[in-house]
Length: 259
Ligand SMILES: NC(=O)CCC(=O)C(=O)O
Image (cartoon, rainbow, N blue to C red; front, side):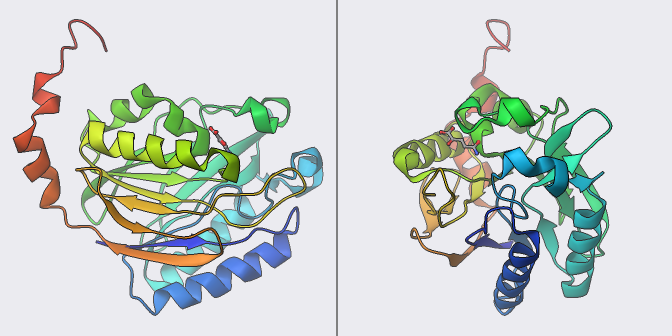
């Protein structure tokens, strides 16, 4: 499976510009013939949370049409980052995944809201899990702050996920946490981690970039720098059983002592 992370800059609250940027980045990525393309968190609006009353996408409809059209048009699987979705009860930070036919594979709303960036004031948390398959490979998808909750990711790998997709707007001052947490999640779950962060600034943050692809041994397969970049990597799934046979963490777990 060849994956491509679109580490783009995101214009604050400027949906039109962001769609143009993502569309250009996707066209560029397709020259590498990836199987899966990944976008960052809140890539249409950025963290312009105080204007979600005008910016949030009604039931995610416009974002879904756009992502589905891109997936079908390019015949590529799309982990569509996340967008601000307006629901009947509030706004959620929601990820959509599409297959090569442009069909919706799964939907997930960020379960852990990040107070340091005011998410709890403007967003509603999701409460459903996020397992899905792409190209017959069991996968799971998470949004940024979720990676600080190892039990949440484990809940998905204990059901079989072999690739953890992470979409993010992770700020630069915590770059060391980003790299360490992602590496720990790959090592402890003995699976691939494909993490797409954004580049650039907004009025409150400088973002870290450093989108990262890790293998089930925790080795870096590919890593971006801080600027906008296309990150492409090949995942060799033979590594998953190889690592899991060597150190049988899943067989050795003690669910009688903990969940
Ligand atoms: N957008 C986010 O969830 C940011 C999470 C973050 O920066 C962290 O340190 O955790």
